[in-house]
Length: 115
Length: 113
Image (cartoon, rainbow over all chains, first blue to last red; front, side):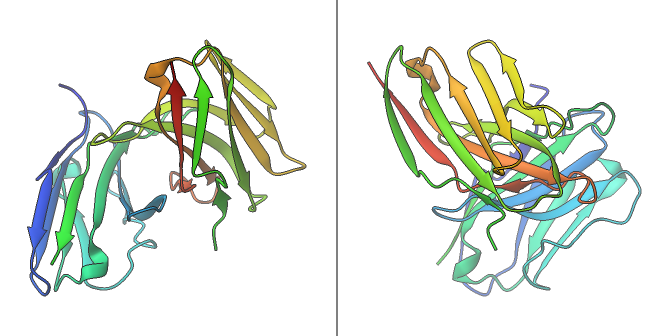
C-alpha cells in the first residue's frame, strides 16, 4: 500500500482530554494537508505543510489545535482540551507540487468522538 | 461564508441513465476545480478536474463542464453504474490559496438497478 495512511481509525475521548492523530503521506509527496469533516458538512481545511516552508495554519479553528510535520514526512495533529464540537472525521491528504493537476490524495480518516 | 455550494444533498438515478451533479461557487478568483468521490469509511478519491481556462474536460464516462459567467460547474456521468453510488464533492482553489482546497458539502448519488 503506497497510499496515505492515518491512525487511529477511530478515537473516542472524554471532553477535556488531549488527542494526537497521525498521518503518513505518500512517499515523495512534499505537500501535506489536514481537513476535517463534521456531520453533514463538507471538508474544512485546517492546515497545510509544503516542504520546509512555514505551514499555512489559517484554517485551524482555535489555539487548541496544532500540527507538526517531522522530517518532511509524518505529521501529527494535536487537539488539546477536546470539546464535543471537535467530534468529526479528520482527513489527511498529500500531493506533489509539480505538474498542473495538484490532485490531493486522501487517507481514510480518523473518526474522533468526544464524549 | 460557503464559497462552494452543492445544493442537492442527494440524487437518485436509474442505472444506465445520465447523472448530473451540480456545484456553484462565489469566489471569482478560483482558477481550478476538482471533483472527488467518497465511499463510506474511505477518504475522498480524485475523479476529474478542470482549469478555469477551459469549459469542458472529459475522462471516459465522466465529463465536467464549467460555466464561469454563471459560476457553475457540473459533473456528468454517463452511463451511470451501481458502483458510482457514493458521495461526490466539488472543490476549488485559488492561485493565491496555493494548494488549499475549498469543498462543497457533497451530494450523495444513488444508482438504482
